[in-house]
Length: 217
Length: 140
Image (cartoon, rainbow over all chains, first blue to last red):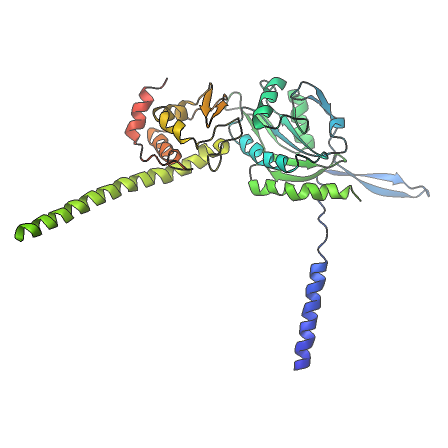
């Protein structure tokens, strides 16, 4: 009797240890559409490789009327979103939550933020500049991008998988999703957060360091 | 002796009456406050924040009691018709547009005012639907 109790307790302890020792490092999944491509290996054989969706080339004006493009975000992980400055619904919440993340990574040069305006009529660079200044984030770290309707809307829907459109019922208003999208140094989407939910956005504080750690190896 | 008893019972009666009246007033204010909170979550919270903290220098906070008190008669108009132009709140300048809420009824607005002026550190008591109706006559 005693023997079996001893045995079972040893078994339980070892199980517990094996469980705790197995906590794997967090690795974010790669999201978005995938494709395959057949590659030829040096020995002449062929293999199928996965091609992940990446953010395509883009060119926009930022809040300083300076062109920004993919090179602006080279070797950075960044959080992208779509908003407009006169937005009365979800944008203030998104940026209230994102501002906290910005503060957290203020001194980390590998992290950036990119907000695209979808109000191509009103949100010209100088309007974005004012907005950034009032939000208290007017520096190179948080870029506000202004572009043509087609460029921005196509990028949002095809590349960031975020739905944006003009509101048919109210003039000057736009409907869009409040996603915050985390992009890695290889232009791939790694995570999406509900910008209106503080709990969801808080996860960025763990996920960004986890993502950066991948590149340190 | 008999007079004393009479006086005493009258005092008790008057006291109860006064107390229950106060209770009824408080009850009405509480009802306004609770309904106002629901409206606030739906209509105001996105911009002004869960605790009325606003957003940096873009959206003013609702925690400046002095501002709310000083402009109490304008609050109904601001909520209903929106606002633009420069204002000084919490010692900071704000100059962005607030959207209108034209579909809100007088009682909705009164409930919102009761919530806003009694939440987040404010304690300014009841504001009636009639007062809102009167304020709305004098919108600038």
